[in-house]
Image (cartoon, rainbow, N blue to C red; front, side):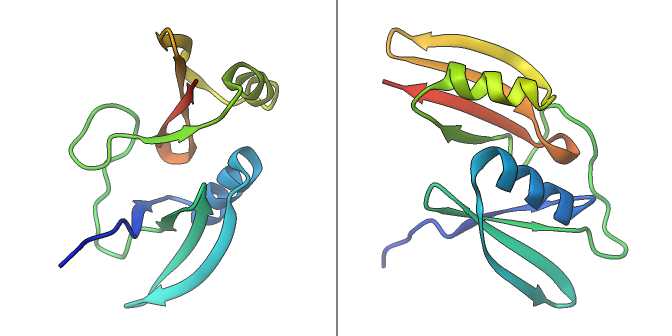
Length: 126
């Protein structure tokens, strides 16, 4: 038996707003809108990978705010020119939680805060 990546799923206060954020800033493409057990899910494709965004269900408790917690720590998205992309994001008012910094002689990284405190690592690997 072999396994392959399928998706990562995020709970969001406003899935529409979250999907719009990723479409605007990362050229995400919407690939599906489905309902599973009464819960609407928006699926986006970013760089060949799928990400699901949905609201919490009635009665569910979701931890809020940024910070380290169990579960998904952050998502990492890579680009070929991090400085240029970071400048565009700053012009749009996106909050950087870690400014662009050298990762090693062949790369750079930064972190931004997405909707609902989703931590997004931005990478450039030469």
